[in-house]
Image (cartoon, rainbow, N blue to C red):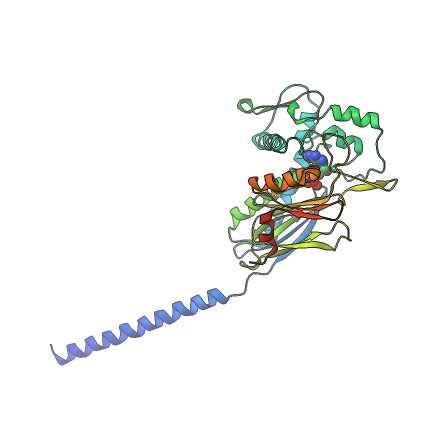
Length: 352
Ligand code: AMP
Ligand code: MG
């Protein structure tokens, strides 16, 4: 090898080492910047829809969080209009006021089918056919009017006779629904949960790394952990205290939480509290609990089981054993002030 050849070989080697180090340093710098870059800020908006206050707290690196929040709110508005039993343009109004089979769209069929399945699972404690009873009492999740007095007993009996989920026929091959014996659907016990799950899916389809949560009047779906890693702290309202008092705190990075409480919609007559969650056996507001909270993966499941758990409060032992089998973890505040929770619930009470 000539001297000049050896020199150029050495030079090439030196260059290779230099550029190799430069590449390593650049990659390491980018990695450090990536790891320690500040998380995107949270955008927050509140609107009134589906008869409740809907609060969206959301952050995204990919798209404007405001546009994601708008998607959430439009989905709530779409579902609110579609399933409001008192809006003559809604599909529920159409079904309730039709005799015989009514053809419905796939989404509506799936929701009603799910509602009937939950009614069976909860032995009718959750019953989506209480429409006429709820109308008589004047409570509805969609309407904002406030009832002030107990209807007379005879009317309650009459309307109660026109309830019962076994009066709903479903024909999947024709996508048709039929109500018998004068029953009316009211999906108020599940539609908020459904809207939360739908809104979550819409957001995640646009940005799978978006984080934040949606709070629909106390029913919450987590979009993603705070700043991408921390759990959100959620207070469970103390039904014996003021709206800002919490009886417990849970920490969630994902999933949903729903509470059914007797403080949401109620009036007091002769010192007795009458609220919006009905015992389908009696036609009167369910007794035994002040609030029931359920944590689960899906908001619709949490919503349904919170309502059902409230109705089944007197059978709280059964609730604590059976509901977790469906992935629903329960926290109950009883009339007496006692608290019952299933063994798994404590996992959510620690920050982990
Ligand atoms: P929530 O606040 O989720 O417990 O839902 C209460 C709403 O569900 C009420 O405003 C009614 O529209 C409806 N509802 C009341 N009682 C029942 C029940 N036993 N089963 C199913 N839905 C109910
Ligand atoms: Mg509910």
